[in-house]
Each structure stands twice: as structure tokens, then as C-alpha cells.
Image (spheres, rainbow, N blue to C red):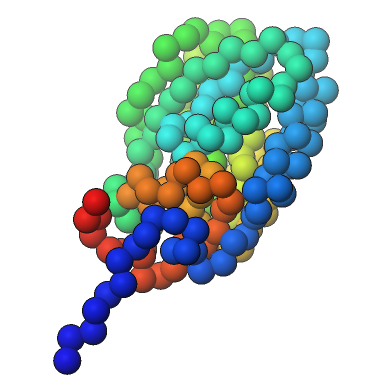
Length: 193
Ligand code: 5GP
Ligand code: MG
């Protein structure tokens, strides 16, 4: 007899476990904004948001910064609709602004193997910023392949594939207010909507 696969609802009920709640995110974003502000003040800062995963985090964080802030975006593609990176990340959308002699802070959603941040930092370093630091919302330390740490980190999380608050699976779940591990049965399902 054929067993029916449940369809994803693309809501919180597709999560195995909530790892970071909306309230925890909000408190930590406040703290990070204070740390970043006091590190850079009185200088101004150029934020480089790594699309699309860091979009939600960046939007919340920059509104809490108390220093003059410029914003640019970059895109590095490593996954398609899978949960594992299959090749080194490629920078697919370069910056629009000149970051020469600017204090640059790269913001990404998650530091996993380290390949993405490594590729982006190398790429941006070529443009001669005055300083270059990184901020990630999540850190999966266990999975690191490259020795690299972020300068500002939101939360350390265990090795699980997570979605929500900007993080996706096949472009879904970015709108969830919390972060949680995605049930295994929804990590490979073809996109039907
Ligand atoms: P790294 O290059 O450090 O292995 O991975 C960083 C990128 O992979 C992140 O910017 C993110 O887009 C993606 N990534 C890594 N782990 C996860 C995860 O658990 N969930 C989601 N949605 N994306 C992840
Ligand atoms: Mg990403």
C-alpha cells in the first residue's frame, strides 16, 4: 500500500523544534546593535547585507544602530533547492557602492562551513575598505570547514537545518518570526506551490 507523504504547510507546524523564539531574537538584536554602535561610534558604517537570508535580520538591526549607516547588498549563491552546498559560493551580485576607505560590516544569516563568509570577505577586501568585519545571526560551529569566526554573533546553534527569520528552504519560511529546525520530511520535497 502506498503511504501518503504529508505536504508542507510552510508555517511553524513544519518545524521539528523552535530553537530561537521571536522574543529571544528581538532581545539579541538590541544587544548586537548596542555592541556594534559602541564599536564604531563616532565613525559611520557601511553595512553589506548578504541576500537573501540576512535581509530580515539586517532590516531589524540597522534600525537599532545609532551611527550614520549606509547600506549595500551582495549575493553569494551556494545552494539551489537543497540543504547542502554543492560547490564553492560564487558572488553573483556585486556591490553598487564604493567601499574604499569605508568601515564595512558584512551581515549574514548563518555561519556554517565558513565558505560563504570567506568568499565574501576576500571579494570585499579587494575594494580596500578602511576596516572589514562580519556579523552573523547564527553560528553552527560544529560544521566549520574553514577556520573563520564572525566578529559579532547572535546565537550559537546545534547542527540542524534551520529556517525562519530570513532563512529559507527553497525560498519558503523566510517570513516565520522564530527560527527552528525543519522536519526532515520537508527538506527534500519538490516545490509544489
Ligand atoms: P557556509 O558557506 O558557511 O557553509 O554557509 C552559509 C550559507 O549557507 C548561509 O548564508 C545560508 O544561506 C546557508 N545555510 C547554512 N546553513 C543553513 C541552514 O541551516 N538553513 C538555511 N536555511 N540556510 C543555511
Ligand atoms: Mg545565505
